[in-house]
Length: 154
Image 1 (tube, rainbow, N blue to C red):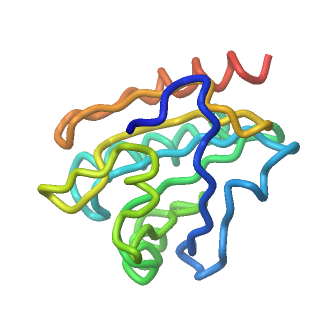
Image 2 (tube, one colour):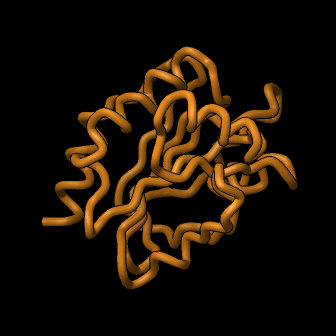
Image 3 (cartoon, one colour):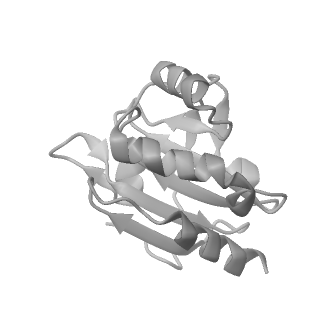
């Protein structure tokens, strides 16, 4: 069942591109979290979406909000991609069990074995305050992220 606005966000702990464990609960009481699921590193639409986050990071991440991105790629692939593209926010590996976190959020595509494009803004209490889900080939708007972040932090 997909996670909806008003639901408690499923907890997760995943390795980032530096093989450091990152937990949603680690931000509890301190920061809102913009959780961005994407299908695969190095793909065209995903590269464009994450580049938009990188290029406008000050609009999405600050003292009140942390950006984390999640795909089924390994942390090894994320490390290379982060170095190549200059991504400084966490790229989390939902590698094993394969896509378990994406499944818990209701954005795992069983046919393709990847996450769909789902974004969830989780508040400091762990409640989903905003979400958008698109299909694999449909890019999300970073302007929508900025609007959602501004609404939860004002």
